[in-house]
Length: 446
Image 1 (tube, one colour):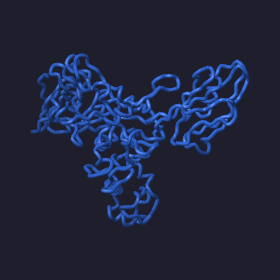
Image 2 (spheres, one colour):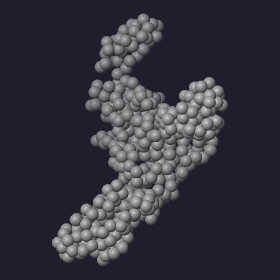
Image 3 (cartoon, rainbow, N blue to C red):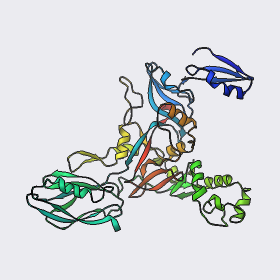
Image 4 (cartoon, helix red, strand yellow):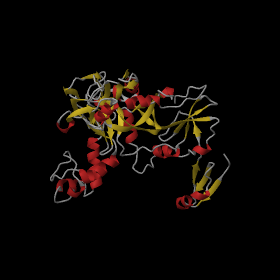
């Protein structure tokens, strides 16, 4: 670091002179009588991490190190010595240090659907078969009876295209398996999904039941502790909550603080006199009080956050992400696609064990999601997002709906729900949402 000092009479002059201080080296300024250090790539060990520190690996010392938050200039890092872990420290919770990967995982379905085989087609002569498809809710417009037809000498792929056209959202991967059979995947949330042959000489067989409509194992919950009571949601992101209720809160009048949050248009002396008086006409103060009543509790004694099985997503990601079977094409198919993708993300450094390797990252648990989303700002100027952006990653959106690791009901799994800003148990496994990946270390292992 070159020696560089400037003197300023006050903070305003210091801020105005930012362009004249070096961007490629650390500097010290004297602002009145106060010293200010502006570092570039300040390296420290992992003993006293701060949210927003970038995590790298030091080849020389054979250990992980931190680039202090606010100082990372990636293009100036000594990459001969330091290896980028592409992750950012977000804080400690429930006895572990937690980091989030800088890249966002693309949207994938949480669990894959049911696999079906239609067999017995004879395309040596013209023919047809009447077939009923049930998918999504397996009711109403999601039950369709169609006639599959073919001409003499047609390749069976002609019929596979007809199956695919039944519904392109919920009937997937319809394809030729052999000259006389077609495979497809049925997606949805009803255990009554499937295929029935009404007329014709073909047969329909479910060759694999996926986990869109059933549990795998016994680790699941539909509850989270919220202000001392168990509930299906727990709020963690105050900014998006305020934006949401401002226009989408209840229209009701004469509400108590413990009733549903009223929209801003109803927060006045006429419609809700008691609330208006309680908060001196300050809608933001009222919303903050309501958020506090709905916020996920931490720490807590029981419920989703209180049960240690659900704090961190590492064990569940490994278990579900590794689950696979052989599909109707004879290929390996993963039953929980997004969790499997999580296990493939990471980086190897020849000759070193860095902790950044594939298989070490996971979808979030309740404690990890709580820790992340309570710190994220809409502006993305929070320390965590500033570092992620400086590292070339994808900023964490304060309102981006994101998959977590755990199952809830037989057809749903947990998410951070970006519309109102809560941890939520009620979103179907076949929905494709983005995910953030985490790593969590015991204090003495970081």
